[in-house]
Amino acid sequence: MIPDEQKEVLLAAAEASVVAERQSLYEQEEEGKQQAIEDGAEINEIDRAPFIDIATPLNEKQHKIWGLRTC
Image (cartoon, rainbow, N blue to C red; front, top):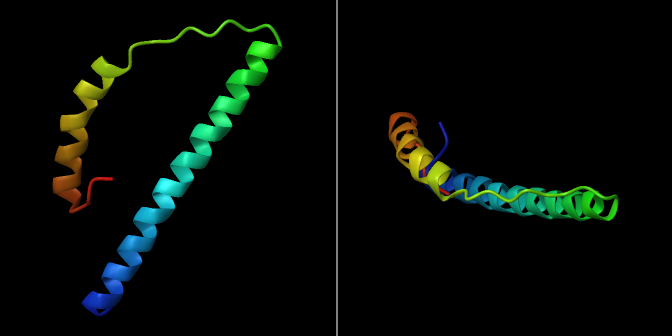
């Protein structure tokens, strides 16, 4: 069994790694998007808000079920 103090340190490190991984992913996506545009692709932007509105309650429900923290 891991002491509570160590659990908190591990959880904080895991949360920080999620943030760093997402930032890296966003940067890679932007680089790929810019390369595609340079190569002649046309990018269609969408309004993500409706998808986020639908997904947020589902994510919150799953976080409660699994005892996860929201990031």
